[in-house]
Length: 233
Image (cartoon, rainbow, N blue to C red):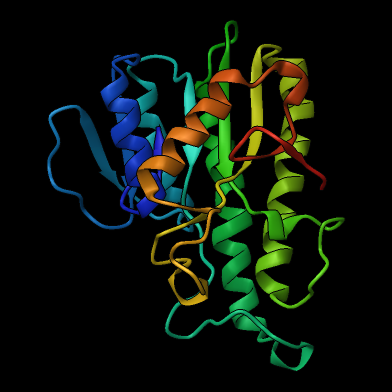
């Protein structure tokens, strides 16, 4: 299950997972329709519309358990929302929108998709977070709403990990930092296209899937970077 499958990283993750041949079915969810795919089954839903998420979960769950769920959707900016450079730029409506997409939406996805994870056996619920969501690692300031929404997302995952230990001991909840990726989300904030830490979506997907492949139960609840390093919350 890839939520945000029409995005740069989400699309690359869906393609890579489908190409791996490890899963009997790969589902992609996005707000907009995607072109038909011979392996990936696409669904249309909005992460901020719980009814649509519940509907898709019911449809997918009827076919059996789901072993991997990745929430790859996220919002940093759009025509009306821009990262704040100073406190005076905070816009309550924009902040609420970022929390709805970046924190509340993934929590709602977890609400309806965690019950589809198998009771026994390894499974993963992962979300795309960001290093700037780390409170301890915040050394530059700014970006109040985005930082706060990602910090909230990390707390959701940390709390979910505690519950999974009781209900699905082999399941993991993970926050992932993909690095800076050449997508629409990061485009206005990339100063050097040749920067060593800049990844194409396909490379970012490969990195993240490698992290998931090597993740251990002791890391459940953690924020992990694209290279597997743990980032402090």
